[in-house]
Image (cartoon, rainbow, N blue to C red; front, side):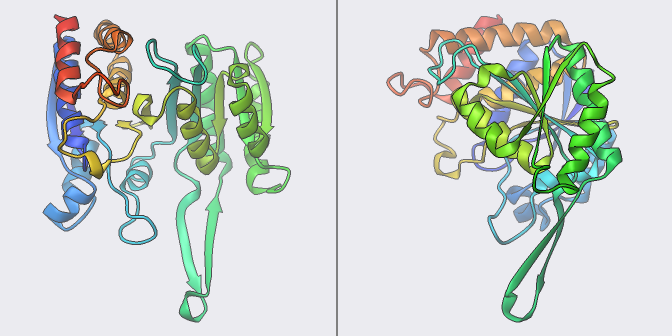
Length: 336
């Protein structure tokens, strides 16, 4: 039995976690869930949005399934998501984006993967004020050759292992010639070691336009922290939104799989939140554990429920009257 830390999260998180745990277990995965807290819930309960017991538990299990966490905008505590990634050196953020059958979207049959360096860049949390009255705000970004090499190596190895055809490195080296230029240099050098994978680089603003115009030309996209964060959300929008996109944060000693959307406090407790993102993240976790049969069984079940469209939540079928628990039961019926 595999021990997995479970962070239900804030807002709609507890409902989604209940759903995900039920279907993962029904798929045949033998999981011992270790419940821990983070985010606003932990701040209220423990006086700390990231308690030491949470850090210790993830260090012990090496695995975590995490619901959405609330991060205050412009004030309050720093992002717990960023803190967890830096604490455990979860250097690769992997965001598959695949159009799902039965979901109306801008680009049917789209299948992209965005990989972002997850620990450095402008998310290094080196910010301070200068002068009286908070007149000037300064933020410092850090990219190291070792970190860029690590995520680039992972990207090309991912492409090879998953039968992908092309890697696109996204940067702003035309303006940020050193800060972003280092990333581009590492990408170009790494591409030479993988001649079987087609390689190209794109400037980030042009890349955003091209993704909206013709995303089918891309396959695996890799970028630095900020650019990758933005582009992975853009990619999710192309196939129907963040509620359909899973995410994984991977390091050498730990892995955290998470719903990539927000905590949606406006619909918390209403039983209408879509559990797809967290369930798909759970499927990524099962494959990470080499539980491929269980992962495929669960993936088939949830895709069938979404394709049929009768038991899905209102964001997928506004006229259907579906609920979180109803969608979960429909997946469980498919599994049984």
